[in-house]
Length: 420
View (cartoon, rainbow, N blue to C red):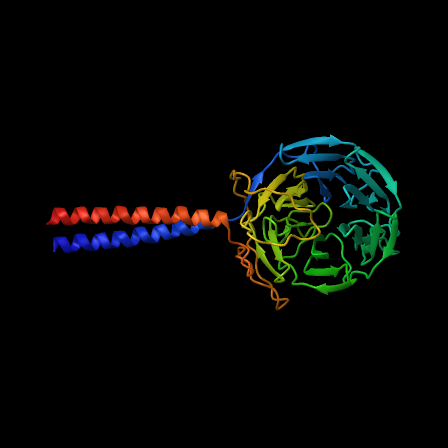
């Protein structure tokens, strides 16, 4: 009887060890995405919404603050984790659009005092740290985004003053600037007028993402289509895209809120992830801070979120680095033609950041049959989420399981000898 009880306990112990080992395997083999806090900008930026990348450096141009507009240009070097002050933008304005073309930064449109709408087109050259003025945008407006595709800069939507509202109403105007000829043309307008939206470019298509909509502009055919709307409404969010070289092609829509102007008591820290291939949404690891009016850029498929306004209606001087879940595991991919990829074989070391507070629990919507239930990102159907990193994790986990089973079998063997 005693021998039988010991054997039963041994078998139960073996089962328990194997079960716990499998749980460990799962946790090790799927390390997930994460955020790391970096050195903040030199000056607090309450209303950036403007950042871009030139030669693997991030340039921010401040467009406003809690006490008024701010002229401030800074450069961030991710390799050194340091900021450098640069020559400020000549004209004091806010809520303008910003884009890079051929290594130069274009700051277009905007407003002063919320009512003086501008078409101004000022260009910054990082090589000479100087500004020049080019032909103004034909339709002065603010609260819009700029996107570069094949050497042309697209200025879509924004706000226009009207007879009944001097602060402006949303518009769908689509004007395109050619830096080579310093000239403008007009294209097919945005079907649903929009401002305070987030935008990104994937495969020559511009994605306009806002409160309950995803509008997709094909620059090659000059046509618009609708994608699955973002399940959680977002105003004043920031968006950026990964290229498919080091992480799967995705658009990341970060932060934002439902408030107007400086009323951001309901800002969120959502990390909404859109898959352009499947037209579907998931959630990633949330931002460490709830913030709106921030800027987002990508370098080598690593995402950076900078500046913005926090939930306490104060400046949020953040600089957060995000590593996608499958970063470094892409074995064969076709990078987006809109981004010049850089190279790094492994993600940066992971330094845990404080657990964000009051993380909202998103809910799925039923407004469109193409919407998906919020979930953690899963492997893409193309099979591009497997690679060396995952293989190494599985190898370590397998060794742990084998060792654990060996220990239990040794204990059982000793027990039998004693009972005999």
